Length: 304
Figure 1 (cartoon, one colour):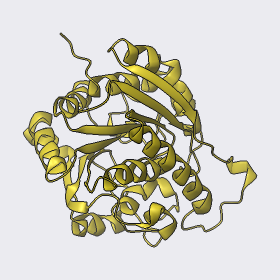
Figure 2: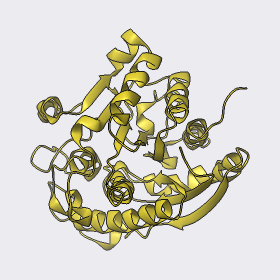
Figure 3: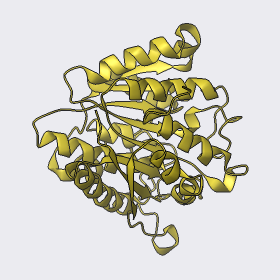
Figure 4: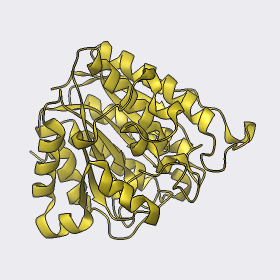
């Protein structure tokens, strides 16, 4: 499934978010003993530092419908190169966000690695939000509400065509898990996109085991495996208070862990990222600590 070597890459990007602070997320997860916890699972962990990101104070937001788009695109290109190189060196990429716009870079990198092998990848997007806005539909202009649209080839070309091809993942190989908050103009886009969607109602009615079983099956069909993009706002704010866009009624502690355990058990996990940890809004680093626990669950930590 995955290498015994892990490359940890920080993406301290907060240009895509409406609230500041997620640029400190990678540091918060490192402080929560990420490297030590993964090392105890018998991995060789190499922390490759952070991708370079410009500070918001140093630039103007630009287009109000896609704020800081050129700067975000440049960061995503740099991140994509780092992720592709890590995978090419036989390391399992673990990216620490930052806001969710960084996913465009992470997925571009792992997609290109497998594209060179003439293989496709799938993706499981665990998130309270669909992140499928475009500059035309976004009410805020915050790019962290657009990355999934860009990954499936819809949105600003600066993001959709990193490495000069799109989509990075075909819509039918993408699964959203835990959706519970969708913008009005975004709803039809999600319905028409071709991605598979499991809302919180699906999890309530069927249980996480059944939902993740289907999600993994969709993401693995005719692919080399799948990437997991885990937004911490998918978890209920009582368990993960340190996020910029909290929505009540999210995944429980155990549901989140089960989802990651099942992803790891599948034998098809290619890479992962955890995003939207905001230490400014957190309580005693609880959200970052949970993020590290979830990464460990995906990478093999079990009760027995």
